[in-house]
Length: 626
Ligand SMILES: Nc1ncnc2c1ncn2[C@@H]1O[C@H](COP(=O)(O)OP(=O)(O)OP(=O)(O)O)[C@@H](O)[C@H]1O
Image 1: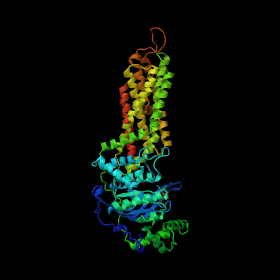
Image 2 (image 1 turned 90 degrees about the vertical axis):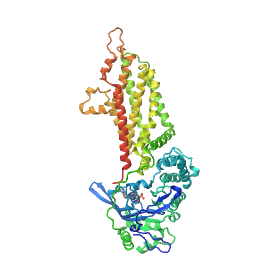
Image 3 (image 1 turned 90 degrees about the horizontal axis):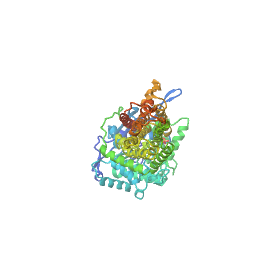
Image 4 (image 1 turned 180 degrees about the horizontal axis):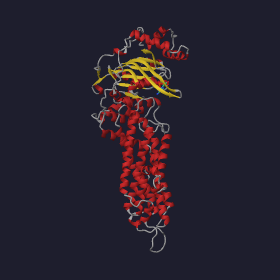
């Protein structure tokens, strides 16, 4: 398959089995921390099949068929082919993003089977720019540096590395501009792409994979991106593999080797000047002054649609490969060495950096605060004026219970606002953790740390506005227990929402699930149907309800408060009281509530949902194609 006879200007591509033995390849790179190891990849007869289920049964589909190639340090290899040729699949396979057990053939890194450690060692730039819109270019790169550069480096050294990266990527003029999104104006598409590359290059990975780094860019920006990558490959001896669509002539000159695929089959591997002779030998003469790559892609498409299909070209390429190179006698060597994953910095340092980033992003989205604070003030005022100074009449019982139940419903139902926020962030999390940027545990804890004070402020504002207007139990201890309970409710609801947002694929699914669960929790909390009347087969819902415990806590807190517990709620004159506070509680089946036990259950809920969130994130970040 490799092109070995490509004329005077053509450099030979050594076949997979000719990568130098051992992993001793290194070069002096003292500016970037001393000797840096370099890595060569050799891919041998890589085959990937998937089984798709159809109405007629299951069918097997070959997405990659015996693909062999070599990617060397100091060089850039481009994977090309028509749409659906398998470019992204190939890149995913060699970048360790496809379950190794589903692959046949071999991927060798410096002649050793690729293992999990390689994934952490290499960088992968996805096609979509998954970046925080509210951070500036410099901040984005600095956060990546703080997470990915070793803890032994000082902040000054990390800053220096970021400035160096900004210069290298030609981003000096945009360094303090926000990344931006559809709502906030920010850097241009080309600059955003360069920031994405910088984020994965900051720790100087020796191997870099890029999926369509030029897609969506104008020709100048595309050339600029490839030029930067070319310089990195050359000056730092890095191995760069990318997929690309229709590169211009000037981009072609910067790419050392091409791997051209057609429906998962390799049809050419070698430098650009070797392509025309390859096609000529196959029987296709490339006209003068024509972009040979474009002509090749047109030929592939034409063959694909022809009666004879693409097989003649595939067989020709395979025969050439077997003639010019010896197929390496490699058994399936996808074995995993099982290196212990290593992170650049300590858990505490990750926690600090991620909390800092979360705080900065949150503070720069003030509408998030103001909308919720506004809602709390307004609803607090509406409830306060509705149940104003309720007193101790039979209506006073109903009004207290209604106020408490509505307050809980408000807090729980409005907590879904965390869903779109985390869904957007999930893609960034996946990008970062797929290459081992930080620990999932640090991420799961950091967001909780940042949001807890905000939940306390919300609970306090709502209580200050409504509690006193209504005339609830006047003691400070009762008031603060009320605030504390609302704080727990907000924290549990947020953990519940982020747990689901880690699992669901989109907003509609997540919103439906969360709203449905919240509504059922409300229904089974014991307010509408007393516990004793809930059928046995539904009682588990009652105990899982995040409404039940705070409802009991708040009703108990109110009707056992010193200023309330001795009151008579019958509104009748005379000493014979028909509705005392203990009777009210007994009526709600809450006479034996232990409010601090319930608080402990709420804390347990909070921790459990955070733990489930962590487990779900681990699952999400590990997901590879089967
Ligand atoms: N899990 C899967 N099950 C079935 N078919 C799949 C699966 N994943 C990918 N494919 C198919 O494999 C083929 C190659 O997909 P891939 O995304 O690698 O192509 P591509 O060359 O990168 O295409 P494009 O240039 O359009 O992005 C496509 O026809 C795609 O539909």
